[in-house]
Image (cartoon, rainbow, N blue to C red; front, side, top):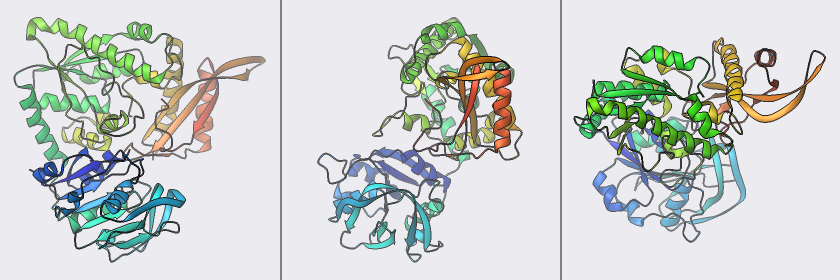
Length: 510
């Protein structure tokens, strides 16, 4: 078994990102609730424990806490943001409201002699997001970093191998954050680096075989990266017993349905269902994004059931439904103790009375870049592994407001034009697409006044899809795309560009 680090979640939105950074350093990670009993942690025997951030104040009655004995196990602990405050408070220190709250990238003065900052300069940048801070450290601790407004930006008790940072080393906005986490893993925890994608592949193949046994599995194949890699992994684990159903809900990108069929029809047992009218009828008049997701999630399963019934005569009952669920889906759907940002159809939208009684989700522990790496490991073509991310509900969550076929057709064409323009770049954004807003504005075409929709363009750079910055596309490209969209897509009179990062926004608009 691999060495592993336990990430204890106290409600932080970045818990999966912390786990991802640990795995990026070739160490296995597992996320558990912050309330996990200490005896259970002892049984798991991790080489290290990381305490996540969270939205609460540790001194408030009812705030998430942990047992003091956690810090007496002899296992190295790293506390991050709320995790630092929790460590200090539990061990007898003091946590108080900030006189000046810190948000965003801040200059950090670090002690280069501290194991956490080994090999790094004394001048660092750290992402801060806090309204409380440690004002008195527990006995045995010393300050190892500070900012202009936070005297104790990091602390350490070297003898007990307890470390903590008020800033977030797991995010891209802390440039040397991964190096700090690596220092904790290798300099403090004694990691040997025995985790990789090849090992994950072997473990998942074994787990799929153990879970499924001799039975058959039904997979909803969208043609996106996640479902494609899931299909390839299932085909390796249980060949001849995987049935892939591609539901074309009429909310795909331009020509995408035909492309998916061409890519998979000769690879797996592939069935295409053209269900555009069925989905549009269910979505008629619905504008709330959560309801859209729930409706589409349930209808997906109903379509699967209808198609699965056709397979019963040949294969008997099919209990297993496979899904390409990945970590960002889970965290944004409010699993564990996080706040819900949005529900994903493959996490929060499954009906309780579905005929499938068990889920197979072999990618649930991976971030998008890990899924792509696994796809390359499985020898999938680059056209699939590097495909642009696309939400399960498709254009339904890129059409703001109610959904109609006309709106879907408008967005399909606008999105295709934008992706074609961006696709010519040598250095491309990590994700780029168009959104059809529910805002109409006045325009002029020739001698006539028009009143058309506003298209919003979105392009971001990210490695983890948990945070992102907007991609600074050049004005000539944006101008060319806008001109082509307004001239070539009937019903559009205006084009705008979204320059918001995540946080505070999400990558998708809904």
